Length: 316
Ligand SMILES: Nc1ncnc2c1ncn2[C@@H]1O[C@H](COP(=O)(O)OP(=O)(O)OP(=O)(O)O)[C@@H](O)[C@H]1O
Ligand SMILES: [Mg+2]
Image (tube, rainbow, N blue to C red; front, side, top):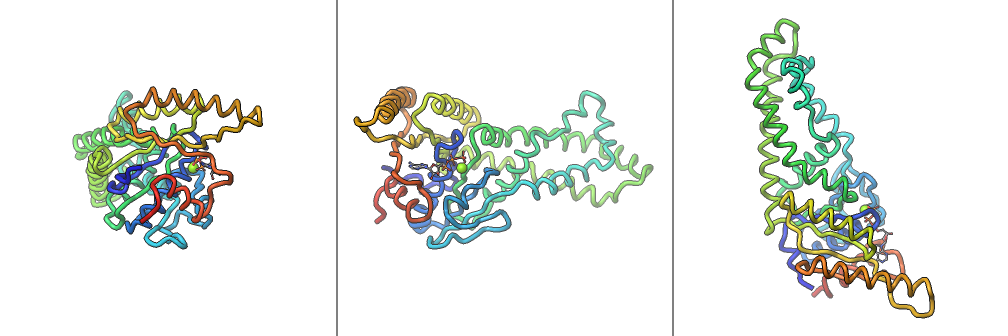
């Protein structure tokens, strides 16, 4: 199996709930680190199962060194704190709400930021995208819906920020006159937050460039051979194409072994074979990787390393 994943800088693992995203992301991050790359495993899923998978508490406060794996750090992002910083920045731009009002009925809505939760998560991602400390950043994402919103955000956030900045420029003079009457904060603060918005817009632009560059970034779709998972994979892949996010690999997880002695197993096996054929038909241009269902839960560093060996070969 090709190791070219490890030439990339940003690896995203996504797919339907419960298919094995966290497990694949963790095993891949461990292999990246074992190969000598400074690696960061980031969870953007509020459910935060990275701690469970690595069998070590990680949390969202800071990067945590992963025990027994050199070169590997992890963090579980929490949106709560970033959310308040972001809301603060927005309200500093328009402390009295008067600015939105001045824009009139129709335009006032255009000032609402796109999905605040996802925006905050995206702004947090920017930090990792610009952090030169790590050679490889592996993102364990939330189930498909959330992740798609997140990936569409650069575009949405950018156009929203552009609009806000344009309006702000146009109405700036009017705004400070208005504020001196009603007694708002100092103009200096206002300029500061305005600069921050412009900076953010530029960061979003930079992030878009990195994320759509297939030499730097790759999204791995994780799926299982069931009809419902195939549908969801299809939606995911289409959406990734739309936002020009590089994707060439699909990990097909939890394949059952053939077992003729048990009717349940035989039926499951036959179902999976059919679905596997469907996946091969649909995605004949992709790198497809089949991963068997292990006899035990894949958890903890040793078992994740076993999975890494299966995925990427014996480490030399
Ligand atoms: N090939 C496999 N063999 C055995 N167990 C597996 C395999 N792949 C994943 N698992 C187990 O399945 C469970 C779900 O995996 P995981 O948490 O990685 O899924 P997920 O897609 O991240 O789920 P969620 O959508 O809830 O975040 C875990 O207990 C994991 O250890
Ligand atoms: Mg998970």
